[in-house]
Image (tube, rainbow, N blue to C red; front, side, top):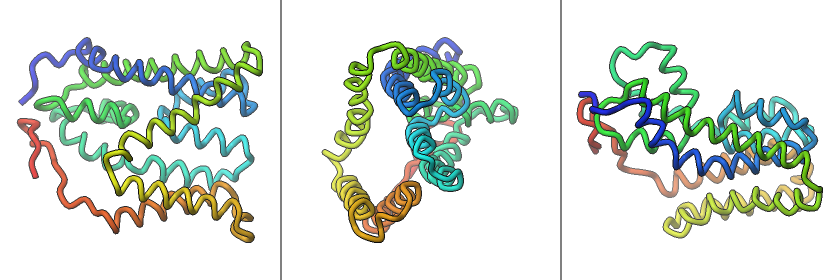
Length: 246
């Protein structure tokens, strides 16, 4: 059953809150790229071809620090592995008969926020709605990157350095709200922080490259959290109604 009114315009409208949220984060990414020594157009090119948020922040930082490409590849893969699960779930909400090339476009634009908005819709999703939703968010991400890159290139260094705190504020804003209501998140974050400090200050461990340290900390903390606090029930959308089933 297809939900009535699933138009490009409705998709674009539903994506406007995501667009506004992405502007500030992408602005920070554009600044980060130029501060790390990349030409002003490089962060924009990355945002145009990647659209992966956290993966872009980590990838640019690792590239600037001379981390090996293998370590960067593995790190980005681990960071983005959640999209396998989200895409599998979202594929059950797409209307039957959607061509492969359209599904590939939807997969490219499937971010955390787009997934959340899509799964809240009733019934099956058509390509017109999805492309409107994706383009709305995508335009905010690219535009924010352009503004951040250009601003970082032309503003005085003192102002750029002051604005750079937005990057750290972004990650704190991502962690703190869910951590306030979830003990498992707090524990996983603390484990990751403790391990990161070990790789920074403990003799021997501080010889491990930053890329592998990120991989080890992330995987270990996530594994401990998954084993200690497993999710026992998962809601899946019904193919016809879009309602959640246990």
